[in-house]
Length: 178
Ligand code: SF4
Image (cartoon, rainbow, N blue to C red; front, side):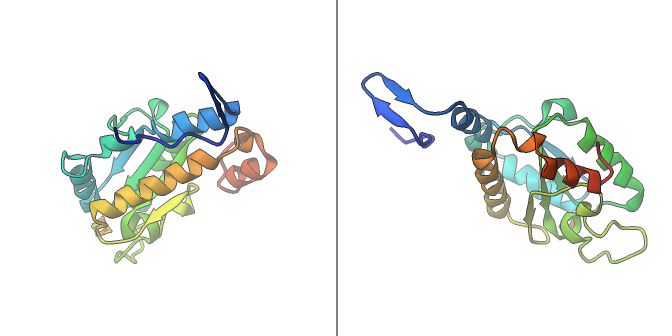
């Protein structure tokens, strides 16, 4: 039978496995990430292909896209974000409960892409913190999956205390988020 997930560091024994709560929580979190697809243009179509049976995002425990920020822990921003839309994106981020992660999919979400104009936000990290950037215009589904796996790496290694740390609070304060 295929090995679905790797066990965290710990001490195996006859009928038991000893590890820390932090590692057990991280294992559960990283394999049940619920994404919120914030799709505004063509990259969103590529995400739909990634969700389809051929690429099968469900393999990573992420088969449930959430369109409610309160039931999502990964904000996936895909497509061009106009400056007018910026406050809406920020509000969606603020409505997500901690811990939350952000993936910028494609050149537009990451940097504004080819739209170097007065009306387009030159990267969503101007208004919210981003954990992983996926390059491409659009990125192929393999790249999106790779981006999700990079998020899984971060989730799996994150300390339970990080969200209460002064560094994290400073990061959010830098974006004007409490
Ligand atoms: S990065 Fe390219 S494919 Fe993605 S939204 Fe921008 S223009 Fe469209």
